[in-house]
Length: 288
Ligand code: FAD
Image (tube, rainbow, N blue to C red; front, side):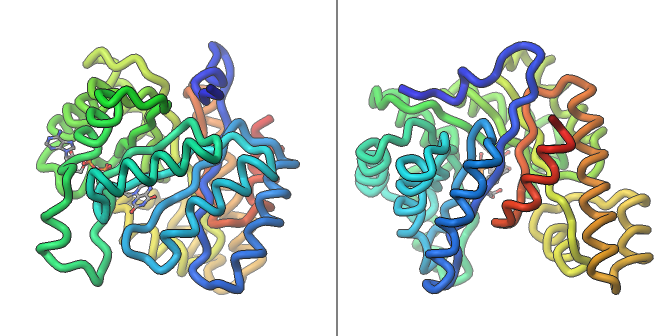
């Protein structure tokens, strides 16, 4: 089994990036050439998101198949408990195994806009940890990854509760954590310290998103609940109306953020590249 855990060695910063299945059918072929390009750039692994209930949900397996078997990338496939019954999960995991996927990111998932209360509340697994426990106790041979939150998950009342729940995920079988994106490194470093204090020993990768437009930042902050440091907001005020300058300074900010984390000895850096291989190329070149 090709476990991504083998990539995490002492003294190395594991570099990975996230891909999402495109929403439109006509963009699907384009994703294959993007995966080929990413393969040339050579991340340690990529992860492929899953949107429960979305029209592109079925594409996640197809894209994982191409990434793993044609582009020869090491793949982590996301799976969400929202939209999945136990039976559907078993089927989905069997499909992943069939195409050679050994790593899954277990998530509760967010509720899609068109999902009713009844559909949302009737999921078989309440939390990511319940799904991890099920997969582990069924003896399925996957390396499991979980999500963690430098600004705590929006549904958690306190940081302490959120960190305890993250530890539960690890206790239930998650062997690697990948963080939600953040723009202020102190939040991530504090989360890592808290998890270490609780005895969590698995690697923890930092989620970094290069911001290349003012609009992207607005959507990102709404979705992730992260805060925007003064330095980044002044980049937006100065260059928000100038796409070329905005891109340059946005990428520079992300490189500076990632370099500082690398110097602090973080286990890994996971880039949210919005399906843009050129962002991974620039960022990885700087980090290597
Ligand atoms: P959980 O771990 O279940 O946590 C949700 C809430 O419940 C938190 O407040 C947590 O503190 C609490 N909690 C957790 N475990 C327990 C427990 N055992 N007992 C009591 N309370 C508990 N969404 C998608 O739809 N598709 C994707 O592909 C996707 N990829 C993502 C990748 C990363 C790296 C990250 C950080 C997020 C991703 N998301 C994705 C978003 C994610 O689904 C949402 O943030 C979702 O709201 C929470 O998912 P989770 O797995 O962290 O949930």
